[in-house]
Image 1 (cartoon, rainbow, N blue to C red):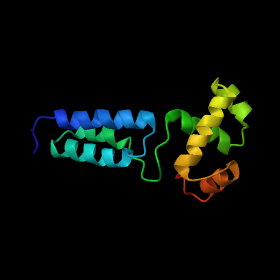
Image 2 (spheres, helix red, strand yellow; image 1 turned 45 degrees about the vertical axis):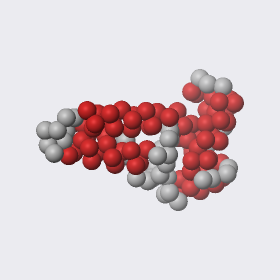
Image 3 (cartoon, one colour; image 1 turned 180 degrees about the vertical axis):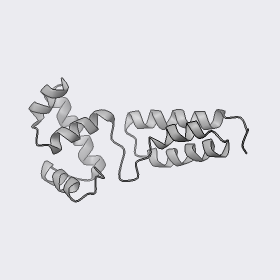
Image 4 (cartoon, helix red, strand yellow; image 1 turned 120 degrees about the horizontal axis):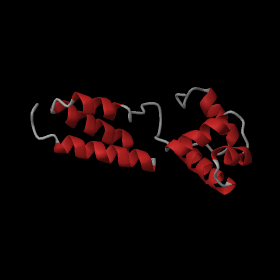
Length: 122
């Protein structure tokens, strides 16, 4: 299928980027489909771009959720995270709630255990 019209591969790549920005949990399936479409068409550069979205060790977090997670894992309070990221404290709490939901934990203590046990792949 090398040489086929690349539009399908590029469309799938656009969907992967959109899902990643939204922090969608269906990202892994879309990454696989996009990678296959690009590889079948010989689009090696696009395959490399798609591979950046692959997250085999867990659910996709948004960039901001990852920043909040990193600071929370380092022991920063919600207030400290808010000050550091120049966002509201309530926004931090919302990000933490989303992180807990995506990782299947209920508290900071469980979050730290999740990361310590290596389930977070970090």
